[in-house]
Length: 141
Image 1 (cartoon, helix red, strand yellow):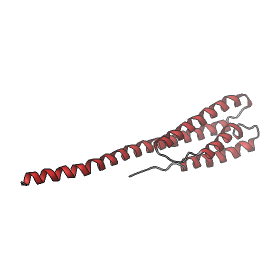
Image 2 (image 1 turned 120 degrees about the horizontal axis):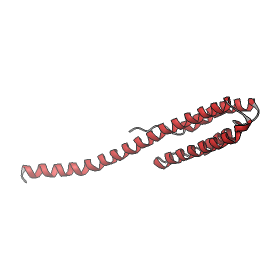
Image 3 (image 1 turned 60 degrees about the vertical axis):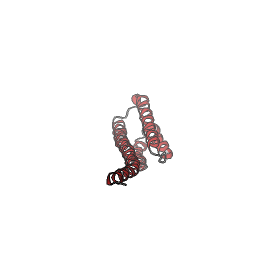
């Protein structure tokens, strides 16, 4: 065997080992980046839901309860969709109980006629939204 044959066989064996490893790491990096971007958009959605809940609490009136109910149902549906998308990207636990509790707060307690119930709902909503956020941790290499 000549030196060029040894070098070419070494280069071939090196590339056979390195190419699959780099492909695996590249795919994992793309998957983690997508997952982290979805977590960031989930955080923005949770902040938006909280801000809308505060606005509803401050501007509560009997005439607008139906409109606010529909808005909160739509927000909850967006939240479910975002959690499903995160589950599809990375097989993590789906926060079913947290979403159920958040929906109960958003569509029932927050829109109650009793102001004490609405104040309690805001506090409970903070905890539930934090529980949903805690289900998803960012992933790095």
